[in-house]
Amino acid sequence: MQPLAASLIKATKNNDVEALKILAEDQALTGVDTREQTLLFYAVKSQSFRALEFLLDAGLSVNHTNYQYETPAPCGRAHWRSQKHSSAPECGGRFTDVQRAQTNPIDAGRRQRGP
Image (tube, rainbow, N blue to C red):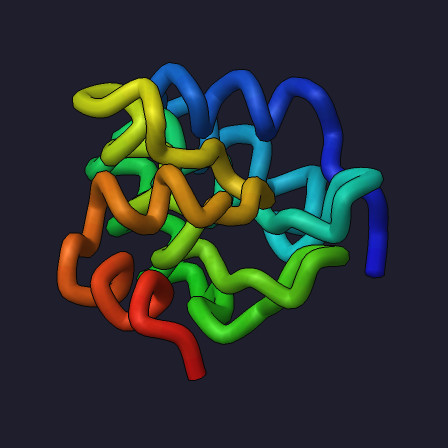
């Protein structure tokens, strides 16, 4: 895949669909960055819903995985959760036992009882 241009990433983060349309004439929207993330990852993490809709209509895959084998949806969910609760991991992060206990008390109870 081709590398993503910084201008495409910036337009996606800014939810600028008009700029994305213009840039798409000269550059492929299907590229990836150094972490194997497509523009969908940037749209989801920055909550750029108009850009997200444009990228989905353009055919970007929601099943594309980054270098940690994550798809855009779980990354966005983790990122949005971290905006509300600082204990939740960012995209690419992993839950520790303490964080898991804070987000899911039932799971924490199972851990305390042992195998």
